[in-house]
Amino acid sequence: MTNPLPVSTTLTEAVSRTARGAALAVGAAAAAGTALFGYGLSQTTRFVVREENLALLPTGSAPIRILHLSDIHMVPGQELKRRWLHSLADLNPDLVINTGDNLGHLRGLDSLLAALGPLMAFPGAFVPGSNCYFGPRPKNPLRYLRKDSALPRNSPKYQLPWEAMHRAFGAAGWVNMTNRNYSMPVRGTRLDFTGVDDPHLSYDRFAGWPAGSASSFDAPHLRIALAHAPYQRVLDRFTASDADLILAGHTHGGQVCIPGYGALVTNCDLPTWRASGLTTWEWAGKSTPVNVSAGIGTSRFAPVRIACPPEAVLLTLSARP
Image (cartoon, rainbow, N blue to C red):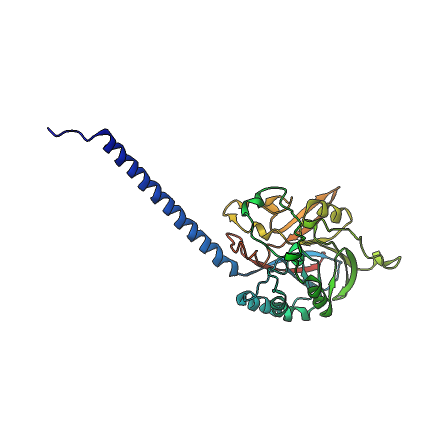
């Protein structure tokens, strides 16, 4: 009969087996995390064009094609993004709308303007986002799960060349809609715009609609409201003022979504089921279609997308029946 192992030896072996099991579990989790990050990184260049159709124009109006861009977050060296943005000119839109967050790097302006060059040959209008004013910086991604994540970044260290960007857009004929209104004719229909500065930084001030002449409301027209971040207070104000269409971005569509469920966050107070796409906003007995773009880029410190491809949106507006 053999002598039993000492109790201390048995405990040592048990602890060793537990440690090996834990190490294997940690290794498996790390491998899964690495694989998921690699997948998310690869999805940042799976660009798509989402197409939407809305019968909003006055009866008998010619259709108008609007290309909606948002959240480009341009960084030097993003060649695939540059080529894809170039290719969007082949869509031949009647109008380009840019709803902000154009820059992702302190030296990203030249790359941005090179990427948008062909599109800046078309008429356009724009509003800024926080990443037009201030550059991204490293942060804990879990902070986006908090409701108080809107923290102004006003340090000179992070200031972006937004004034030079706005001058370049203006020189190309794109209209700056920062807390102002404006009218322009497009294919025989007068488009009345109102836009606000970035609500995420609480810079927004509603400027109302273009006044025009005493009979201007009777002429064929459409009211389009622009904002970067679709905070509910802004959507309420636009809808109450009889906007016919609202365009916004900011949310990145959630950026990391769960298939079959959708976005976990919107980085504002917009419900997660509205994180991207075309929905209807209702307020004070009125309703307005709202298009929230999932955006084209990401912060360079969080360069992943999962179940949420980068997109531009082509909106075709047609006449009401």
